[in-house]
Image (cartoon, rainbow, N blue to C red; front, top):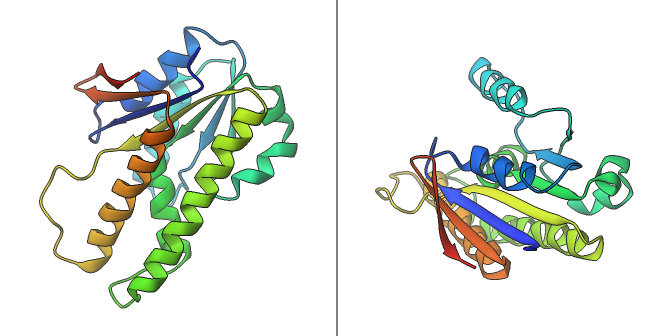
Length: 186
């Protein structure tokens, strides 16, 4: 059984559906770590569609940081498998809550990236320690044009490095292409 699986791909490529299917085909007790914050109607609609896809086997915890705190969470402890959906939405929240902008110094971006990597490592270590399968969903952002503004470039660059970090540690990496899973590692 694979312990850490990364599912990556472009926007609306079917990543979340593929990730959910990986778990629902083999597990009965699953925890969905939802990283999105419903700031507007569009995000509320996306969240609703994701929720409607999941059946009663899923519990949900809304969290995008401080993953180490899950160690004492009853839903986490009960679940056999964990789905983190998704890294790039999580990164957006970190950027928002830490007021990252074009005026932010590069050292602050580096510090934020280090904090996020540590948090992701905490989650992977905790799942390993508790013997839980972990599926992580993320967007592949590096295939487009270079963004004009600094904040967008830093977002893309940090997302890319976080994805590489997770992929290196993952047992399996799947690329979602038009709803089709393509295994690229494992």
